[in-house]
Length: 137
Image (cartoon, rainbow, N blue to C red):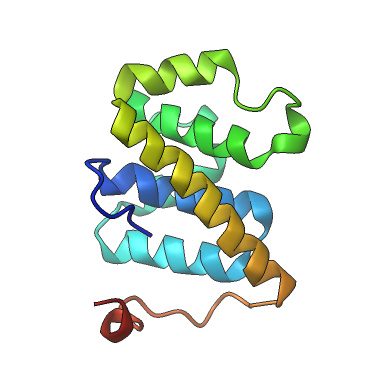
């Protein structure tokens, strides 16, 4: 799920979509994003540690900022104020305004996709990388 036209690097996008899908319990999207990351050459240790990124040393500061934004933007009920000032400061240290807009849009889009997947009970496990290449161009 790449934000078209953004200079936002693909890896933080992919890590964010996986983490949001894990939080939301969307089996289909967790399957898709973990397999796409592996297919793109992302090391298994990083994929496996996305759920515990705060306790892992394999993510850059920029990736950590993106993951924090993804979590706080997803767990709205846990933080009545939305995304914390600390997280916004970290995000601003690593991303420009256009990239931040893409990060916010990505969090909103993957949350919507997760909710659709959960509502219709879309199961994970059957996704194969590239299976939608013909329709996504």
